[in-house]
Length: 459
Image (cartoon, helix red, strand yellow):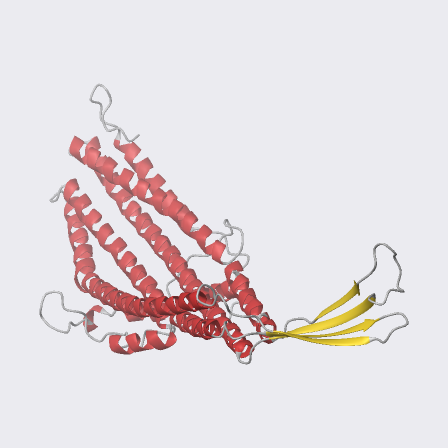
């Protein structure tokens, strides 16, 4: 069906083009029709908010992060506890040549010993454990925000694919009408072979686009279901970008204005909070920064503990010895380690801990700089998207629609050729698809900016 010419130069009947156009329309329409989501939450919630809530409750990664927090909290008490005391029973000086308990030296001994860390060491160990809890909590919050962002971005991508399939279906419908007109002209010899070839090419291109979008939707749906911890093929209703996001991205054509007349000027009246405010917020609210700060404080405690490593822990022991027919005996033992290898042992560990602290501090500064650069980059992307949408809505889309309408009217009365009509339809198709792609990019970039800042970036 897609071959315009046979071996003898035979032109495919134009009726086949009508069948192909109808097939494209059916493909695009089927891509838009989805079974209702059986796991959608209760109606009072917005669909996107409901999906976010499901992910926050069921995502395995978040569940694991919460358990890591619980594990870190459970390590606080052991960090400050004394080592377990040691109880022992022994038999001393038992004779070998004449076994028995009558020898003067034979003694049955019960002993109890306890290690007492040098003052301050347990407090530092507890401090390090508490900072680890803070780091685990911040990491959990960072993952939570990342899951929210991922759910939003996947949902927005579904919304784009659904709108793009609608555009394909609408243009396939227009193409089917044009094909009928061209078919009639071909029957009376007023349409040429070039019209046939071009119609076949455009129809095949729409068919390929419908197939690509439909398959891509299945992949995005699987990724979204993974975040929700449910089977990858679980159906979902059509995605819709929230009105609040749409109104922030797209202004009515009559309200579009630019900050200046210079080429590349931004659209005026940005809905975003000032960039300087967002850069300040990212330092205060971003969870990864909180993770780094908690890790730095943990390392400070570890360094302080390493610097006390040469101070001796004291072992105190008390034993009771019983002898047959003789006086029982009590012994007290105090043992202190001698740091004879301090340079090779304790000092080396202190040097290592100090280097780790400097490393974490430098990495933190680098991470803050990278976050600020990323926020500035996304901010620029959002303004670029707003400008692109303004140009599309205020100029390109209405002009493309008018051009196609005029070309179609001229084609109906044989004043404009079929190729011109197809060119105008292709242009409008590209404009409409670009509009939905740019709107989706805006929504996805906004979701990423919200994650980095830790709160809403819109005013």
